[in-house]
Image (cartoon, rainbow, N blue to C red):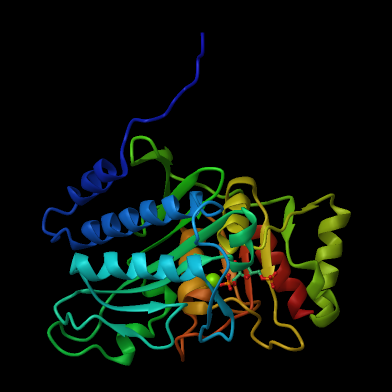
Length: 329
Ligand code: AHM
Ligand code: MG
């Protein structure tokens, strides 16, 4: 007899509803927006799981604003998420990794602005390795009914009202926070539902994993190398998937640090502030972790442009603190 604790109790919908009931005067739009994102995630998860069979792998034939070749799945995911956010009616503007400019949904009544990397980890798409979606939700700051402005879109990460990610890994998971801890949901494909599988996530304060692209070492601040050496002396393990969501998620569960530093060629590193770093920084802080650009809290950085990059160090608090110390020396 099998005795598998098969955890299919609380669906994402029910969970969102129970949270909504804590705010009887709220309109329910944020709840609806989270449901819209979950629906798009299910669709994208389906496309990804068939990737080798259907004609969705490979390059799309266009270069995005980052100067990177778009993969077909990047484009599919962008379309799916944008459509879900447009149809829902709660959103007035979207910032996406795949689009040069702000997408103004011409819905000036929409209360929310969403920043999204629809499919992160491009180099892993065609090789059957985990990839993810990252999203941030902000309340617009200019009055509803007026055209959206720059200040609606260039908000500091600490202004997020909710953020999360979807990890398309050995199973598909959605992790999100509305600023009161973070919870993880695992997708049950045959039932078509996300179920609460990781309630009230906590990141260990210390960790034994360091996550950096070793190929960067000749081009980075030698203090970072000393920090990595000290990790190694303490017996830490190197783990690097090359998909930020997957690397972050593992370190969240197990304890560890992810580093994408500035390099000689890229003085702000690679990771984008608005739709990659901020959402994960928000989740990290909600689960007891920390996120820094080496000096400053990620969530306190004032964005100046949509596709701005930042050096990015995120993970277990004591590891990130120690790295900041080493960078000062
Ligand atoms: P992408 O948005 O083009 O996928 O780039 C972001 C990804 C992150 O998921 C990952 O951590 C990093 O780039 C890997 O970069 P590298 O290949 O330089 O190690
Ligand atoms: Mg990305």
